[in-house]
Image 1 (tube, rainbow, N blue to C red):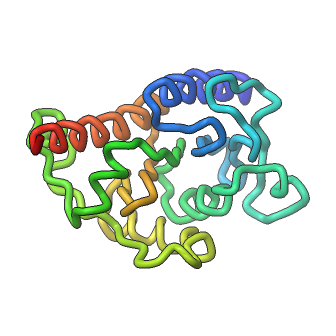
Image 2: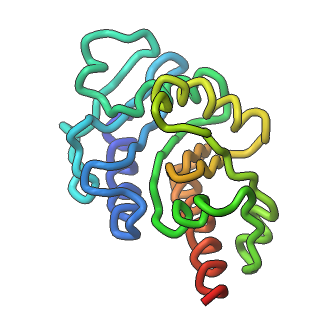
Length: 188
């Protein structure tokens, strides 16, 4: 079972890397395996060439394995614990969506697919980045639950998304990124 999931994570990760949603060592992707367990990329994973050794299986209770896991593991764990529908999670920093978020409080796409899927997205403002990683594991799932959305565009930080199907995960991020790109180009 985990081999099949790892293959899916590898495939989607490569696609997202090629679209510049993930950096060389920047981003995270995970899948819930059981109620209390999930698989996530390791800290030093390079997203265009992930293999089985680049993933680690974690329980929600922290143990020695967490030291090897992605810096975002705490956030993924919290989303899985607070949002039962989450089966796959990704954190990406697509450049147009991240840039758009810096100067806007809402994303109101004007393109067909963006408007159909996400007609009005509130951009979450973490206010300050000094202590963001101490707060993010609480604030991100809370904001996602409050807005009842599978995506959270965070000002100057990127996008967290969860989905039941892995292809939907990449699709959600791609639609947001494309809508932001179109809006930014339309201003030129």
